[in-house]
Structure formats: C-alpha cells, structure tokens
Image (cartoon, rainbow, N blue to C red; front, side):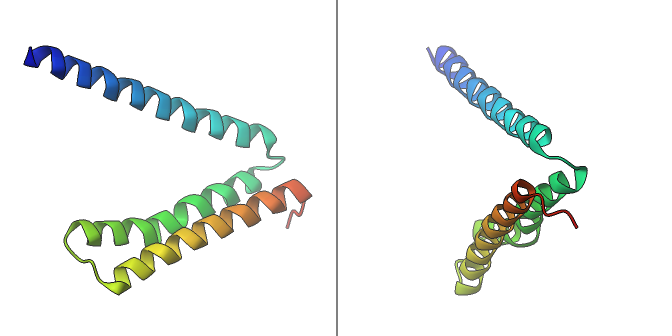
Amino acid sequence: MSGYLLTLASLVQTRYHVMLTLSFWAIAVCVALAAPTLGDVLNIVGCATGSMIAFILPALFARKSGDEGAACKAMLAMGVVIAVLGTVFSVKSMVQGDHA
C-alpha cells in the first residue's frame, strides 16, 4: 500500500512540475512575442530576477537558517516591492514604446 501512495505522490508532483514549467514557458513566449526589442525583454527579466537574487533569496535563506529578525523581514519586503514596481514600470515602458 505504501508503494501506491508513493507513486500517487510522485504523480501529483510530476503534474505540478509540468504545469508550472508550461506556465513559465507560456509567459516567456508571450513576453518575447510582445516585446518590440531585446532591450525590453532584458528590462523585464532584469527587474523580475535581479531583485530576487539581490534581496528576496538572501532574506529567505536567512529565515530558513533561523533568523526571524526585523532586518530580514524588511529586506524581503523591500525586495518584493522593488521587483513588482520595476517589472510594472518596465512593462509600462514597453507598452508605451519608450525606448532609450
């Protein structure tokens, strides 16, 4: 019976992984098709992932290692705000056609 549960859990994880991967792929394709220049794509990717690497992931790693301090929470919140605002302004710039 435990082999069946392990297989069922594995199947659920595989479906989740496939759906998540396809969702990311579809978003990437839509952004690439909608962007008039490579610079616009790099702006969006940079805003979305740059703050993740610089602020969000280090704060999450610190929380995982046991640090629940205010600085950790502030860094996490600041990273999310920067990522969201940067991405919104990059998409707005792309839609309006503001190319530097």
